[in-house]
Length: 147
Image (cartoon, rainbow, N blue to C red; front, top):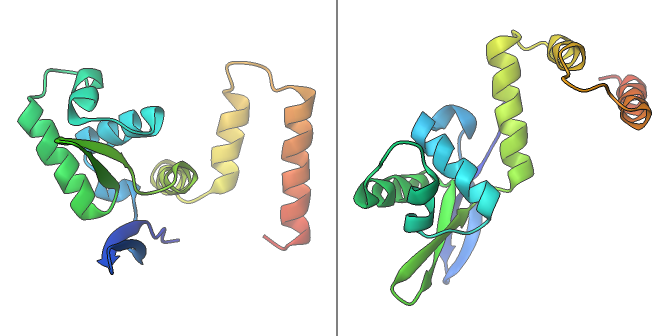
């Protein structure tokens, strides 16, 4: 399964999505940390991002990494006077799906059943009756659809 994230193309000054490659696999650890900050905050300056990153990255390093993420199609920016305000270019749900596919492929040999079983068995808190019912409904739906 290949997830297509979105790179941005400018045509008539309008940003339009363009197919890109698998989101999660194309990010370094630091890039994932930056994306985590942007998903958590929604919008942030380079200084905001720098303040939330572990270690002590320099401002210029963070700006460079944001530019690289923008070139990869994961981040976009808006100008606010002299400041750049960065935000994810990919919706959080799309990034979540991509990361989960990568996790299942990497740690569970592509087995969704093994991944779900591990999540259910290792859940720190007991699943509520509502959560169990929702999972049951999703499984029933998948059966009906032949998935």
